[in-house]
Image (tube, rainbow, N blue to C red; front, side, top):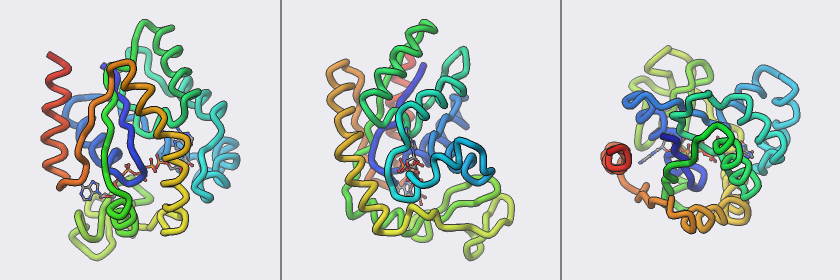
Amino acid sequence: MNLVFLGPPGAGKGTQAKKLSGDLGFVHISTGDILRDAVSKGTALGRKAKEYIDRGELVPDDLMIALIEEVLPPGGGVIFDGFPRTIPQAKALDDLLEGKRMAVDGVILFDLEDEEIVKRLAGRRTCPSCGAVYNLVYNPPGKDEICDRCGTKLIQREDDHEEVVRKRLQVYRDQTAPLIDYYAQKNKLIRLDAGRPIDEVYADLLRIVNEKRH
Ligand code: AP5
C-alpha cells in the first residue's frame, strides 16, 4: 500500500510518518529530509535546491520528479511525505506507479489552522545528526536542546523563521492545496484532524490505515 501525507508545513506529517513507518514497516520517503541532506552534503541537487528552500519556495518539478524516480523502491509500501506538492508532481507519481503496476492507495490530509502552524514551527528543533524532531512546547527533549537519542545539540531549521513560514503557507495555498480536489475526485482523500496531541492523531491515523489494509 502506498500513502501520500498531504498538508501544510508543520502539520505533523513527518512526526506521524516516522511513527507509522516504524510500527508498520512502510518505507518513509520525505522529500524535505532528502533535500536537506543533499544541501548539507553540498551535492549538485543540494546546491540547486538550497536557494528555493531558504526562500520557502518549491524546488522545480523536474528535479523533484527525477528524485522520486530514483528513490522509489520497486515493491512500493511507501509513505510519501511532502511529495507530491503540485499537480504535475501528482500526475508524474500516478504515471510512475502505474508503470510498476501500483497506485496511490490513500491520501491523508493533515488539517491544521495557520496560527497553530506558526506556533509549532517556531518551537520545532531537529537533530542534525540523527534527524529526530522535537518541539520545545509540545514534545521537548529531556535535556535542554540536546537530542535524547544521540546527544547532539539540536538546531532550528532556517526555513522555520516566521517570515519564511508565512511564505511557505502561501505557497501551500497556491500550489499544493489544489491537490485536495485532485485526490478527492479520485476518491482517495481522507481528512485527519491534526490539531490534537501527537498520540491522539496517531491513534486515529492507525485506525484509518488498518481499515484500508483490511
Ligand atoms: P518539508 O521538509 O517537506 O517541509 P513541510 O512540508 O513544510 O513540512 P514540515 O517538515 O515543515 O512539517 P511536518 O508536517 O513534517 O511537521 P513535523 O512533523 O515536523 O519541505 C521543506 C522544503 O523543501 C519546502 O519548502 C521546499 O522548498 C522543499 N521541498 C520538499 N518537498 C518538495 C516537493 N515535493 N516539491 C518541491 N519542493 C519541495 O511537526 C512540526 C512541529 O510540530 C515539530 O516540532 C513537532 O514536534 C510538532 N508536532 C507534530 N505533531 C504535533 C501535534 N500533534 N501536536 C503538537 N505538536 C506537534
